[in-house]
Image 1 (spheres, rainbow, N blue to C red):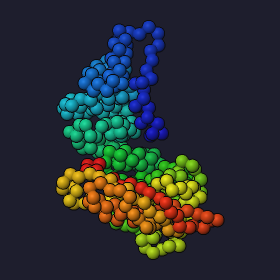
Image 2: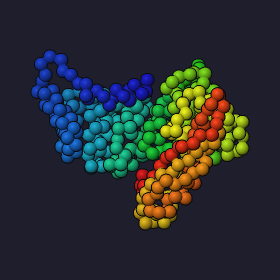
Image 3: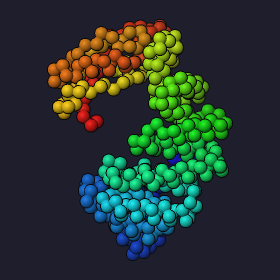
Image 4: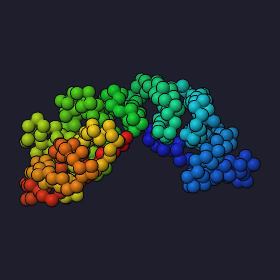
Length: 362
């Protein structure tokens, strides 16, 4: 339900139509909206800003202030204005209009807050985005608190959507995921994709906080749930989850537990010399290269043992001599792959290769 509303508010502008003979206001709006689309197609940001402002003013006069169309037009214009005060003013007014129409702590207010965060370019107007994080997050919390009282199931879904949205905006490992998981677990009649996603994010949260035992417990519970559901859309998440568990168990010397997940992985993903790792760690940037703004790439060849661990690692080519070699080799040793299986048993494999890049600010 929440995702449907979020998607709807972002698409209606492109689907507007007019019944009967359009008024002058309707014609003016349609021209402004078409000019905006043309500017976007031409990558003309200056003209896109001009027409985003015009279509915002005309569209919100043409439609109700709290309508999906006006909401989408307002968010669009706020993305383009470089003036923090203007963006803050129009967004605050939008929230006042929606609150007047639906209620201060209504689901519509929460969905609007998430829509703004989802659609706002975080790297283009930091002042406005700082406003978003300060102003919108507390609105999200108020709405969630009201939902917890009225509809715990929907509260769990809303908290999950909020955490995923904030995570995509750079606000990771938020403690609110515990609420999302708790409400969904307590109120879901059976395992489902939302509950599985919430449990996965909760496990990542606990791992980040240093509680690896709790994280492993939740990941194991998720694997059982995904196997029982057998939904193809969850395959990538199952691969990632099992990969995390393989790495964790191998580090603890629990080879039998790691092996069971390797066998499980072989059932949902075919082995290939071109396969991506199921677990990887990022290479540490060498201090000398970092301090001297050096970037580069290291190409490596390697084999796999029967547990999916890289062995016999060799450097094929490397930029800047030895600068990045050691860091690349060290990182690759920590990676884990699905091992090759023959007759139902894992066996060593040869002839794999990969490249590890080092780029400043990326």
